[in-house]
Length: 240
Image 1: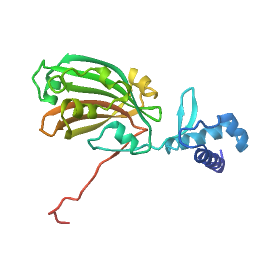
Image 2 (image 1 turned 90 degrees about the horizontal axis):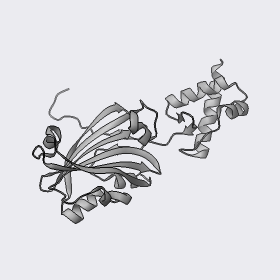
Image 3 (image 1 turned 90 degrees about the vertical axis):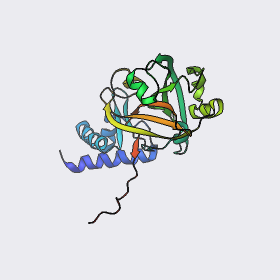
Image 4 (image 1 turned 135 degrees about the horizontal axis):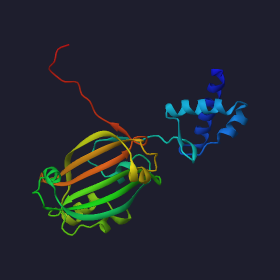
């Protein structure tokens, strides 16, 4: 099949993406084929090329969409709400569930508490412009935030603001790891992506100004909606 036809269709779809804007539903294969006077197989090749170049995204059973620009995600100690707002996106949060459990060895080590100490656990779905972005599970030592429950964070309330106002603790710093994973099972449904889609798993441990660990957050973040910014510096004192 002539490459020039594929290129022409791809250029037309890119033009539509600019005109309709990020997140817009694009015309179907049949309509594109008629508009560009090509076969549907040519359209499929063009869409496959645009998908690989992250210009469009194809959702099974729902059509082809102009891809939204992935907001860069620096590893800063800021709330999700503030992070999305400063990128011009409308943040929202939906509490999925909450409970309390005794810390196992791994959780106790991460939170720097004793095994079997009580830990409050709250799962939340994070959205930007009404599109799912991340599924987070927040772990807080019971001694850090007595009486904390899932309903306290319902309606999009900020955990960091609550931590500071109610409990007098302000996040100072922390440590976060980033691991590439695949989205499976219920997480794929929550994040509205096909099973097996790539994602980032962020695990963050934060300390207050007194040096005490106040949270551990295990987040599954859509890789197609996040870019990770990592500052780099050149080591000093080394020769060429």
